[in-house]
Image (cartoon, rainbow, N blue to C red; front, side, top):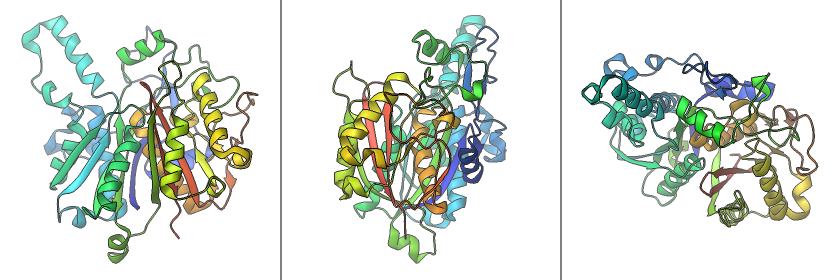
Length: 402
């Protein structure tokens, strides 16, 4: 059961700002400002704007020395704990802190390599050995909050955040723990990352309107847009949450994961992950009211996900709305899945399906109901999908708490 949400995304900081921008289709994608991109005139990305780590982390902990993904993760954790009003509960026993991370601290590593090349090896920062580690995010959350933690870092590509949530949910469902912190964080916007993604022709080029660069399922989509962000959730046992007066926001009731059928067929494992998640939830295809798609705005992956949905839902596929929030968030890698969980929680609460922003021209190969505008709907069950480079796929079935 989700009782708290903390989110920092390109389209907004805080769950309300995040949700409102989804409904308005207000994109957070723009020209890159996090590094000097003067030699990359086409560089666009989803940056978390107006983020000051000292607004969330005490200066005594020297937050500006942390990697950016750690800063974002810590800020999201603070927001989630406040949202759930759960600080007291988190200090009572060892707490699972599960964080999905896809790229590690790329900007820290890149900066140090350039520093060593220009000034010599003796000028390397000793802090890099710690701040560049993928597990720095989960460890910092535990250390700064002063809680006894069972930290776990998951690195399965874009599905890592969903996988971290599933692991934390298992700890609660087994009766081992009553409360957990879980989510995902990534900060991949560096010259190295964008240059390599551009060389691999995985991101759109020549965008005169950056805010429209990500257009999931649209016929004119030209590639996904890299983004940064963090989303952290507080998960609790339902009885324990109700006993302390917490407000359940969403229930997690099924999870599945699968590799792709082959390295030449990316995204094909989504069918198996959805089938497993649906089976574990005990639901029938016709009981699903909404699908929060991976939908990265990639020519191939959007089509493959569409085909997998059709195979899963069969005759019901055309009756069930599908949307992707990446039109406004971009693809924040491991943070994407937790952001989708948060969007579903808000969709359940308000009875509104978030639209697929920038979806204007239907693609004959992608012919499902992609929700081009916010839609009022009484939704009770949703499937959330994530696919990652390397062939990882994860799906989560979530339920509205009544």
